[in-house]
Every structure is written in structure tokens, then in C-alpha cells.
Image: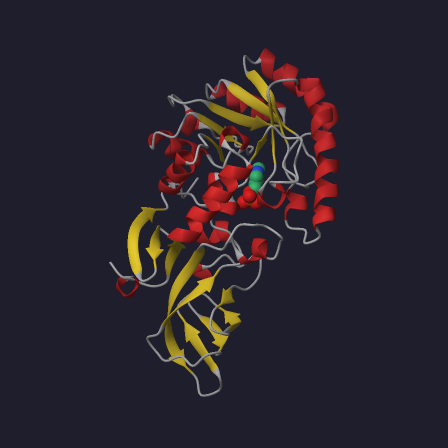
Length: 329
Ligand SMILES: Cc1ncc(COP(=O)(O)O)c(C=O)c1O
């Protein structure tokens, strides 16, 4: 199949750039030093590529992702790094599944679903999930009393990830990890899980890094000083050209995660307006109706979650098509 055969909007993965990202990360964080987060791509075929590069343990955000990874034979060591109360999907899974807990309720949910192992999730500065470090020991004891094995702690320094200033990113990461280590002193265990694409080489305290976006990247992360390249684009078709210097392509809000801002475009085009099914752009190099162009999303995760499949391309050739099979909850 060729690019011209695809129905647009279509997710494209540049095969060479993907390989480069996989290689760079595997060299920096080999094997179990990286626990890739599959929420970024929601694709077991891509997770298999990461496993081929030596990373056999994965991070998930939903019970559906855990179940899908197990079904795909990638269940060696899965961490559900999120507070999920309805864990019915995890019942009876033949895999090593560890769940993050931060309250008596989430401990009960894990124990009730027959989960064997947990991490105590610590709030290290991002106002999201996680208990305060001072509460970690008490929760660990509670988990043990409920029959759960406590493997250690996790704490995601999400507030540091996107900071443009590397030294500020490093400072916030260190501050966050001091909180995580404080919790770990109470909880013990082998696992200190943290980190993401923005801090993958700054976080020296975690035993494993949960980066996800590195593998495909987006324009938000591309602003930072990272060695990973934008491998993901959305192929769009020009559907209307105005005499007033703008044109429209068929890559709207339903094909593009917009929470990190407008996408980037090639050939000097500038995005002006994004609505449900349309992206209106100021024309750089001249375009005509029917032309195809690539739009680079600002935020990878929600963009992929809108699509059912992604196409791996080498130049104009579609060499593989992968299902985005971990969608849903
Ligand atoms: C729990 C957790 N770990 C790690 C990450 C890092 O992901 P990424 O590398 O895509 O920023 C995230 C992203 O939101 C997350 O929620």
C-alpha cells in the first residue's frame, strides 16, 4: 500500500525515526531501567517493538491496557500506575500485575480483584493521585494486612516533565524524588518507579523510568532538549483552498489531541483554526484541493486514542499497519 491509498485523516509512524527513538532510549536506559508507558501509544505491536529492544516490563494507565497487554503475551511485569477502582478486568489474568494504591479504598479494590502486588503511589508535587510521603508506611502496612505484597513506591513528577529550562526540570525532579525516597524509607521494597520522557536522563533516583512519549514524540516535547524525534504525524487531505491565502484539510479535533495547543505543519503552513473535522491553515507553499500533507500533533497520547490504527511508513510506502488495540477503559 502507498500513502495515496490511505483514507485520511490517518496516523503515520515514520519507521526510521521510530527505530532511532527506540535505539537512543535503549542505550540510555537499557532493559529494566525503562518501564515504557503504553498509554502513549495504546498499541501492542509497538509495545512488542519496545520489548524487542529489551524492555519487558511495562507501565499501563487503564485496566484495559493491562488486559490487552496480557492478551498479547506481554504480561511479564505490568504496572497499572494509576488508581483504578473497578479492577474486574484484572481478575484471573495469568500475568504479573502490580497496581498503584494510595488509599484504603484502592487497597481494598486491589485485594478484592485478586491482585498480588502493589506499589504505594506517592504525591511528589503533581496535584493528582498519590498519598503524602508521611502516609506511605501506614498504607504499606494496610496493604500487607490485606494480603498484598508491597514491591515499593512510585511517584510521577509530571509537573517537571515539560519545563523548557533543563536546570529547573532537574531541580524539581530532585525535589520530587527526595519525597519519593522519604516514602521509600518507610515502605522498603525493590521498586522506586517514576519519571517520564522529559526527565528520563535527569531522574537518577528511580530504579525504573516510566517514559512513554519518547517513542513517537510530539511537538510539545520536541520543544525540549531531548534526543528523540517526532515520528508521528497525521496524514490529511486538502479539501478546500481559499483565494484569501488560507486552505482547509480534513484533520480536525476528532483526529488531533489539542490540549497542548495547535499542531505543527510542513511547507511553511501555519495552523489558524481547528474545528471538529477541519484544520484551516495559512498557506505556505501553494496547495491545491486533493493534495496530501502531514500534520504533527502537539500531544501524542490523545491524538492516538482518537484513531483505530497507525500506519508505519518508509517514504511513500506503508510497510505495516498496527491496530491501536489498547483503546477504551
Ligand atoms: C504515571 C505516569 N508515568 C509516566 C508518565 C510519562 O509519560 P511521558 O513519557 O509520555 O511523558 C506519565 C504521563 O502522563 C504518567 O502519567
